[in-house]
Image 1: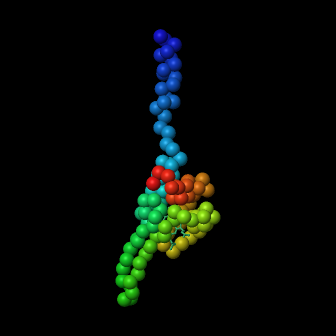
Image 2: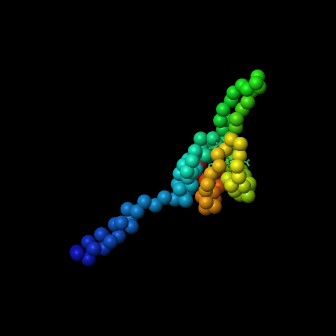
Length: 110
Ligand code: HEC
């Protein structure tokens, strides 16, 4: 009996450990990348969205965040390591960018 108790106690922490999947991690990062969430502009799944529409000097201006679900890895990495006019600059590691790429370009889960 004591043996089983010791066995049970020693394995309980392992069972209660909070594991998250690669996809869950990637999704979290997408909405909280140490800065404004990608989802705020590119939509929940990277499908893109209209950020704002307004009239400036009698011209209709539409501010759009592009769809980022079908980009090459090179293009994705390039976009996240350079500066843009509208999109903020992020300071992400290569692994983090890789996770974000995994999230938006994955067909599963969504
Ligand atoms: C404030 C809105 C905004 C946020 C937040 C934002 N983006 Fe963007 N993103 C844009 C806009 C707008 C563009 C088009 C380039 C430009 O004008 O900045 C763009 C361009 C891109 C591109 C290049 C698309 C292409 O066709 O080459 C990628 C990739 C991208 N964003 C990924 C992300 C990821 C990943 C995040 C989160 C870490 C993010 N963006 C956060 C607005 C945003």
